[in-house]
Image (cartoon, rainbow, N blue to C red; front, top):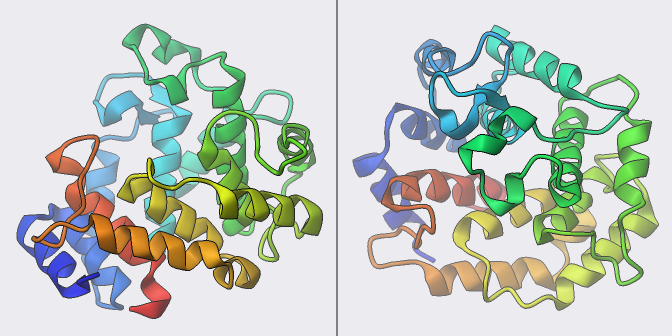
Length: 263
């Protein structure tokens, strides 16, 4: 894997946010006020981020979670924008879990973000629970945690989308709520899965969840994912992007952030 080529690609093609992410990954200063201003132009009055990040569209949990991930990565948890997003999460919570906003249903969301679908509710609940745990949230998450646990199969996989299973590594690892059985069963399943269908964004997401726990970092899956990234990397340092060329710089930064400790 050629990290320098990846850095060069972001430097040459990244927008203001992606350049800030790159600087932050390598411990360099960035203009946080400008970054926050960019988020503020998109954020809705309710504190959520609109579907597709398109101004005027209703807020949805999926896009808000993406924004919170980046704000955490950049260390901007004290910002009004971040705090408003956390309040949006709590306002959208229903009986301890997080179903997607029904208002986005007419907009044709992708399969993983369909309101009312149990698989969507499960991964969003796992993702938001993980984000809150990473932020040091001191509220009661027991209903969400029980809901997630209830959907783990005997083989360790969680119902629905595969990303729910790797999010469990972060939620139930040592830096989360430390449930050894749930964690070890999920990791064991992931170690046997076929990763050939995973794109760079998914691999980065899985690595990010794995690096939150020392045991997961020691798994053979870690090296298998790194080898896959090396195989998929293109000559210019980027990786193929299923969502289009415009997402390549974002995906590169997600990979670099996940590998921050070793690059």
